[in-house]
Length: 246
Image (tube, rainbow, N blue to C red; front, top):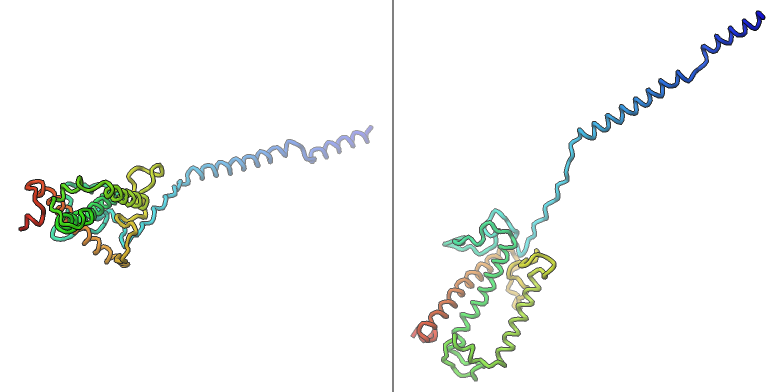
């Protein structure tokens, strides 16, 4: 009996030093606490970190015939400002306009100038020189009245050629309908440069090109005034241009 009592006492003492489940629990709790703390710190760091938005790169400026659009200059720096007036836009057509609108205005100006230069010469030739239409005889009908006298067989190919030329110009410089806003010029199209240069007069240097276009614009502006003046003058007295000059 005494031996059993001693063994029981030893077993109880040994049990006191044996590992138990209650000792592991605090370690697990401590591990979870560490993970929670780490997760909280990461969340706080992600919230505190400033969000950097990527700024889209601005498209590179395109240089066409030596010209690069510059919004700080009148008409984005297109040539055509000549002395003594310099940049002349009293009605403000180009004021506060975008690049496409300025290019479209220049396209209209240079094309009307080219037509007016041909018209001014046509007034003089049509009234004062032998022409195929009138059987190589000098016809003294004023130019304003000559269109109704031209046969349809001559007018048809004439207007057909005009339509073909305009269609080619539109396909060269303008964005196709449905592929962009209406009245939009192509980004890489320089106003008036349709690629027609049979005599190779177009300069390679940008400065020389700007100088030549300024001359073309000046002559075109003068021709528009001249053609309008010739038309008005013939309507007033019914006489040809050279007849009025004596």
